[in-house]
Length: 261
Image (cartoon, rainbow, N blue to C red; front, side):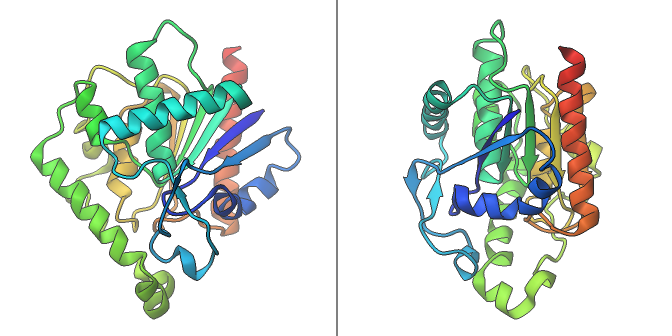
C-alpha cells in the first residue's frame, strides 16, 4: 500500500513524518510506503511549531479561496500523475482540507471515474466551507461565525506563549461546537455530494477545530466511515492507547478496501 501524506499549514512533510512516528512504528510490519511531501508555498511556521522544529515550513495555499484550493488540487493531481498512483491519502489540518476538497471535486465533476484514493485518513482537519458552498451546500452565517472563532482560538491556544506558559493544559476544550452533539454537528452539513470511499476521522474534544473534524465526517458515506475522538487538542497524541486505536482504524480501512476488491 502506498500512502500520500499531506502536512498542516506552516509545517512540512518532515514534520508530519515526525508527528506520525508512533503510528508508523506500529504499522512497520505492514507493507506500507508513506510518501511525505511538502506543499508548494513557503510559509511562516504554524503557531508554536518553531519551538520544536526548524524551518523550512510550507503550505498548500496562501489564502484559502475556492480558486486557491482548486489550484492546489490541480497541483496535487499533477504530483499524483508523476509519483502515484496512491492507495490512500493521510492528512493533518490543512492537508486534510486539501485531501477532502480533492475528493469532493472528484465526486462532483468526474463521478464516473475511479476515486483517486481508496482510503482517506483525516487528522484534526475539516472541510473548506467555501468549497462546500461552491458544491451547493448550505452553510449558515452561524456556522461561518463558529468556524472563524475556532480558527482564532486555535491560533491562540497553539501559540509559543501558550505552550511555554501552559504546556499541554493549553488545550482548554473550547471546541466551538456551540454546545451541539457530534451528530447535531454532522446534521448541519447537508448537500448534494459526499465522499464515497472508506474514511477515518481523528479529532479531539479539546481541539478548537473539533467541530470542523466532525463536520468533515458528515460529508462522508456513513456506512464507510469510522470516527475516533482522542480527547486531546490539535495534535496527533503519541500515548500508546491512542496509537493502538489509530492502528486499528488504519487496519479497518485497509480491510475495507480488500473486501471491496
